[in-house]
Image 1 (cartoon, rainbow, N blue to C red):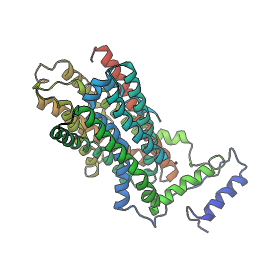
Image 2: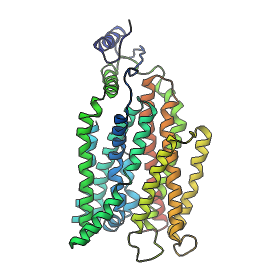
Image 3: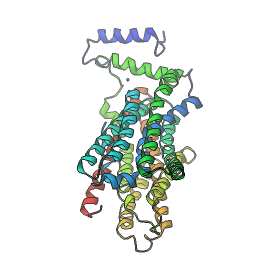
Image 4: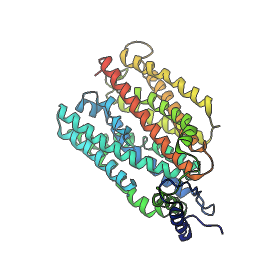
Length: 411
């Protein structure tokens, strides 16, 4: 008789298998798969996009206010802020950490002076945000790996959309505060902007509890995860050893690692040092950052309607992005030399870097779980491994960026 995933008979069978095979070291295999009777709909895709949006919104808010924060905290803050993103109920905990870290960053920026203490507190705040991101987005991508590829794509696009919200809010707050005669504008703008981000992060908790967690398809996925925790020591979770699964997924892991490394070597550590063509353009760093955020969103969405780039073609495409490292460094070191002097050139190189990065990351993240067998347990392992590679790319990119800042004596 066929047993339906998530039924009481299924849970009973798991316990029987555990007892029968003698606990630890058992080799019983099982297949976990959501029922085909339940389908992914547009509402679930929007909620998956919200996971990506909330996960990266705090980081994008900081990028929007990076000029003010970098001048306040100093000590290579722009290069070091991505370090904590390499750290690894999870959804709710992630939302709380994201909200707390975002709001505390604004409070520290307003109340602290240009001291080592302020910089230390700023990194602690980023540590909280990074930990929240690791818990929140890694969990979301692990769940999405058990769903059709469109769910992972929705998360990646949601992360990109998170970069499009801060700049309009930034300009709106600037105009409102100037019209109201409020002073000092940077401090109040930062506090209001980051408070909005914290509220949106907290709003994800009821969205998840009342919406995503109750969706029929996700209910089955969460049941699978719960059953695995019950039998994790007595029943083999995958048909093959985990190392064999990781070996299959590793090429896409290397791709996403290299893509993130190149991005974080130059952005924002080098781009925050770029100077505008006209000294009167005091918001140039925010403008160039918004350019990155918008175009990267386009890059993340492009794979949904472009032919998929896989294998060696994808790897070579990502390797070509290494040329952005010397290009961005030269733009920062030689601001008075053509073509690095022109604003259009800076915006063009930033757009190309963002577009190629968004496409490369999405192609890699979607292709990772597809490289293993149709067994959903193997796809889940792949789904957790890909964010691990992504976060380590962030770590290595940040390390190299900081070393370059110090070696080149960039402040």
